[in-house]
Image (tube, rainbow, N blue to C red):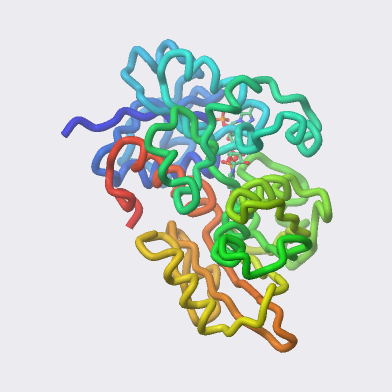
Amino acid sequence: MERVKVAVLGGSGYTAVELMKILLRHPGAEVAAVTSRQDEHVADLHPSLLGRLDLRCEPFDPDRLKAKGVRVAFGCLPHGTSMEAVPPLLDRGIRVIDLSADYRLRDPAVYREWYKEAHHDPANLARAVYGLPEVYGDRIATAELIANPGCYPQTAILGLAPLLANGLVEPAGIIVDSKSGVSGGGRTPKLPFHFPECNENFAAYSVGSHRHTPEIEQVLSDVAGRPVSVVFTPHLVPMDRGIFSTIYATPTRSVAEAELTELYRAYYAGKPFVRVRTTIPATKDTAGTNFLDVAVKVVRGGKVVVLAAEDNLVRGASGVAVQNFNRMFGFPETAGLL
Ligand SMILES: NC(=O)c1ccc[n+]([C@@H]2O[C@H](COP(=O)([O-])OP(=O)(O)OC[C@H]3O[C@@H](n4cnc5c(N)ncnc54)[C@H](OP(=O)(O)O)[C@@H]3O)[C@@H](O)[C@H]2O)c1
């Protein structure tokens, strides 16, 4: 079987290396090019790939990628940079799975409001499919441009989807309280992620203003069929990787925990990467995997509490990107991921 030639853009970063590790064990993918601003051998940037990938990074040149036979590019670039790279790739018939936030929000005015800059490629927003297979699965196979979902949003969306799809919780004012490990900030150095700043420290950040808020609301509103609003508060925890979200919602009628667990099991039946648990999820149970673990509880006073855990770099980014790749190129959904 001929392997699908793929390119990885932004080769020196954390999501890029995680992606390459997955692609190297994928039966149908060939990493044909890695682009970077750095003129380095990939294994010099990522010694964990030594002996596994004999490629030198190259500057981003869409014509060269096309000439190499690249059929899909995984964009592991920061937002803002990504929307410069995507149009010339699409123009050359190269499909794109973009891990940045650039194509996740449908409305460029909402992008401007939350990202504090104008969207440079509004024309391609309409072509983008939000790459969350458990929600938009039927649209992913034919997509030319996938807006790979954010790490935090996946815990909130998959944590709440069964409840909102069935009208079982109030759609306004849902509280999403999330914690992320430090790799969520990427490899590019930033002060809050500097070891003495974050080690032995625990704090919230971007309270009321985190950019994942409109993304969560956009998708959950699709799921619910009416507007959904959330209060989303992220925190940085001094661990390398993992996200844990605790979500509080008000039921629209009296519900029993066992009934909700059964509802989640039915909703995620046949969806191999969402594991519905009756025990409490934990980041270590999902570390390095593409699983998102979820449990739903009913507590005193009748409130519903949802607990969700995932690995931010695999399920939260590169793993779900490969799940999308599998759907786009006709591979089993789990190829390379189990
Ligand atoms: N970290 C996570 O948990 C996570 C989860 C979900 C989504 N994401 C998203 O995935 C994307 C990549 O994240 P990451 O964590 O891999 O970040 P990262 O480790 O900082 O890597 C991003 C890479 O992009 C390239 N780059 C940086 N600034 C650039 C610029 N101005 N122009 C061109 N290239 C530039 C660099 O690669 P070169 O030096 O090789 O050029 C850099 O290593 C981001 O959009 C992020 O929001 C991240």
